[in-house]
Image (tube, rainbow, N blue to C red):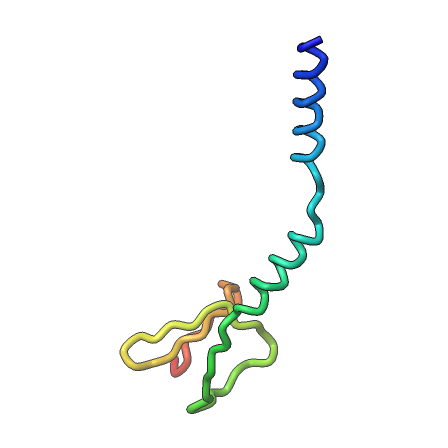
Length: 80
């Protein structure tokens, strides 16, 4: 008799513990989504850019801005 009661209690705890709380998860997700901070920015200067390629990386070296396309075949150094 005690085995049946114990098994019933364990089964009851498992069933209630495995409840899919999708409403709680959705509320938590929405609450966290509203906490994303906004970063303000301003454009100080623009530079010419080749429209034939995509920018993969930018590098400042010796007060010069270098743009990488990620393709060694298209590698060019301005001014050479």
